[in-house]
Every structure is written in C-alpha cells, then in structure tokens.
Image (cartoon, rainbow, N blue to C red; front, side, top):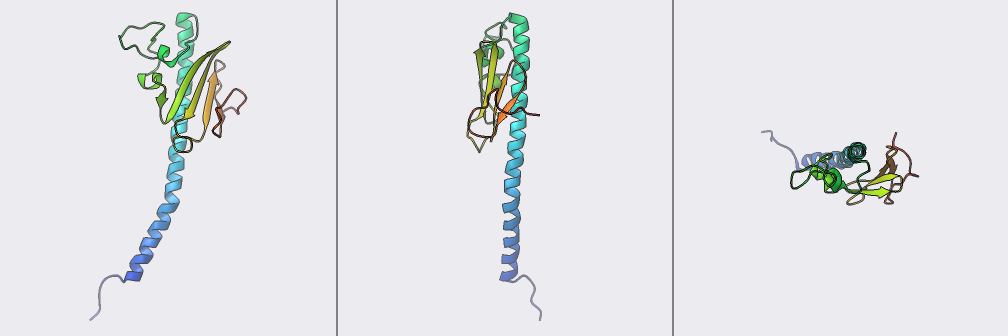
Length: 150
C-alpha cells in the first residue's frame, strides 16, 4: 500500500523556498513604497509653491507660514488663512514628512524632511520662489546648493 502526502523534508524545502522569495520581495516592496512617498512629497512641495504664487498675487507678499496658506478654523478667507492648500498640509506633517515654510529676504523657503529618516523617507527637499525643487540624499536638509530634481 502506497502512502500519500509529503515528507517532512519536502515540507521544509518548500518553506525554505518561500522564506527566500519573501526575503527578496520585502526590501523591493519597501523601496517602492519609499519612492512613492517621496514622489508625493515632491508634488506637495510644488503645491506649496503654487499656493505661494497665488497668495502673493492676492495679498502682495509671500506667506510666511503654512497656516497662512491653509484653511481657517473660523471659515473666513484672508491673509491669515487663504484656503490655498489642504488642512493636512497646512499642519506641516504629511506622507511621513515634516514640511516647513519660512519667509526669506527675496521670497520664501520650503523644506520637507522625513519624520524618521530611512523609514519614512531617504531624501530631504528644498524649494524657494524660483520654483526649482532640490534634493539631498542624506540627513542634512536640502538647500539651493543641493542637486535639482530632474
């Protein structure tokens, strides 16, 4: 009478193959997730730049904070809350990044840095009134001297 089923060795070989495949797939999946998150952050930085242009055309100066570009808690639009970016971005934290907007002599500066470097992002981003997004592949915040994103 022939026995049916798998031997313990056959089961262990199948499990080992599955473990190898998963160990190869997980880093690739994490890398793809970081690329997707960083692409979203670049778009958010560009959204802030567009909002700054609109704000300057409406109020004659650039906004100095993200809150000035965002919606008002009271519902009225004005220089303190222009309704140009979503509330989630106006709070300064989105997509695992911390966004900062500051007034500068000639305009403004936007910085986007990972909340947890290596986990929520591998790059830092910078943009000013020139509209060019710069990146830095490291912990140091990007600046206007950092390489441009092409």
